[in-house]
Amino acid sequence: MIERGLYIDGQFVEALDGATLDVLNPHDGSVLASVAEGGEADIDRAVAAAQRAFPAWSGRAAADRGRLLLGLADVLESHAEELARLESLDTGHPLRDTTLLDVPRTVATFRYFGGMADKHEGFLPPVDAGFLNYVTRGPIGVVGQIVPWNFPLMFCGWKLGPALAAGNTVVMKPSELVPLTTLRLCELIEEAGFPPGVVNVVPGYGQRAGARLASHPGVGKISFTGSTATGRAIVAMSAGNLKRLQLELGGKGANIVFGDANLKAAVNGSAFAIFHNQGQACIAGSRLILHEAIADEFLERFLALSKSIRVGDPLAPGTEMGPLTSAQHRDRVLEYVSIALEEGGELLCGGKAPDDATLSQGFYVEPTIVRAQPSARASQEEVFGPFVTVSTFASDDEALSIANSTQYGLGSGLWTNDLSRAHRVARSLRAGMVWINSYKRVSPGSPFGGIGNSGYGREMGFEAMHEYTETKSVWVNVDAQVPAWYPRPD
Ligand code: NAD
Image: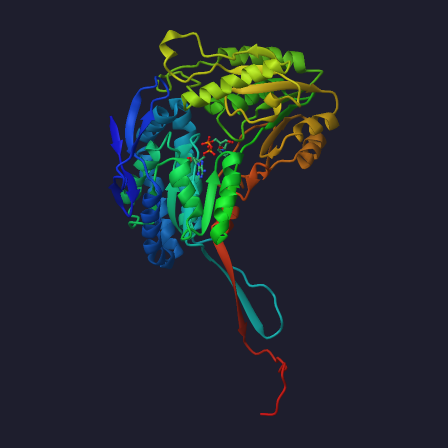
C-alpha cells in the first residue's frame, strides 16, 4: 500500500495531529493508499513556509522561474507512463485517457506557462504631458489553490503553472479522494530544482484544511475549482482579508445539434462531450438539444454508440470508460435517474451499474441517456456523471432559449454547417466557452472559465497571468510644469 505525507517546505511530513485518510481504488473499492490528513495547523505551517519562500521566489528573474517550469515539464514528460498509470489507479480514468489527454495536457500547460513567465509584460499608458507612468504586474503573494477530484493532475498544471510563473508561492489542497499524483508531482518538483516552500501540498478535507486555507489571513488569493455550493462558502470565508478569488464552478453544458449538422461527427463528438471521463467534467455536454427533424436518426446512432462503449477496469487495454471516482458520487448519479423518471423522463439506456460481476465492487455506472423536459431537475442540475438528457427544438430561438435556461454558463457546443447560424448562436449562448462542430477543446492558450453560477475569473493564457498578478501604477514627474496648488511666495 502507498503511504504519503503532507508536502510542506520541501519535506514530506506527518499531520501535526497524526491524522491520516484512506484513498480508495474506484475500480474495486480496496484501500490504495494511506495519506496524511492535513488540519488547520498544517495549513498554517504550509502558509508560513510559502510566506518565507515568497521574497526570494518573486525576486528571481522571470526567465529563471520560466526555466524551472520548463524543466518541470520535461521531468513530467519523462515520467509520463508512470503518472498516467497512477492517475488511472487513483481516479478511475481509463489509461487511454490519462495517457493521451491528462498527462500530455499537464506537460503542455507547464511548458506554456514556463514560456510565458518572461513574456507577461507591464505597459506604459499615455498620460499627462511631462509625466511618465508605467504599470508593472507583480505577484500577489501566497496563493491558496483548492481543487476537486475530477482532473487532479491536469489541474496542477492549470493552477501551479501561471501562479508560479507570475512569482507567487502556493499552498494547494487537493481533493481528499485523489491526492496521489499531486503528491508524486511534489517529488518531481523537487527533482526539477524548485526551492523548498514555493509549492506546498496539504491533502485534507474541505471542512478543515480547505476552510482554513480559504479564510487564512496570510493568503492573498484563492483559486478554487469545485461545486457552486462550496464556491459560495469560499466567497464568505474569504471576506476577512478581502482575498482575491477565482472561482471555477459547476456547469450544465448545452450541446445543440441543428438539422443541417454532419450527423456522424455530431454523434461521435456528443458522446465524447458527455462520456469522456465518465461525465465528471464541469464542461461536459450534459444536455443534448436536438432539432426535431434529425432527432430520431441522431438518437438511433447515439444510442448504438453509447451502448457499445467499453466500460471496465481503467488499467485494462481497450477500456473506454472507467468507474466514477467514489461510491458516494456513483449513488448520487444513480439517484438522478430516479429523479428524472419521477418527473416524467424516459430512460433510453443505462441508468444502472454494469451487469459484469468483475466490476461489482467498483463505482461503475453505464452510459445513461434520459429523455427529459428542459425544465426538469435532471436537465437543470449538474449530475457530473455519464448522464445526458435529451430534448428537441423546432427553431434556432427555441434552441437558444433552452440552452440558456440554466443557472450555469460554462461551456456549450453546437453542430451546424451553416456558417452564419454558427456565429449567431455562438454570440447568443450564455457561456464562457463555445465549441462549434466540436466539444470540450481546451488549450493552455485559450481562456477557460464561466459566467453566472459557473463562477468568475479565467484559467489559461494571458488571462490566467492577469489573475495571478496585481498591477502597480508608478508615476514619475519627468519635466511636467505643474502649477502650485497652494501658491505662496518663496
Ligand atoms: P467540492 O466543491 O465538493 O470540492 C472541491 C474542493 O473543495 C475539494 O478539494 C474539497 O475538499 C474542497 N472543499 C469542500 N468543502 C469546502 C469548504 N467548506 N471550504 C473549503 N474547501 C472545501 O467539489 P467536488 O465534488 O470535489 O468537484 C465537483 C465539482 O467541481 C462540480 O460541481 C464541477 O462542476 C466542479 N468543477 C468545475 C470546474 C471548472 O473549471 N469550472 C472544473 C472541474 C470541476
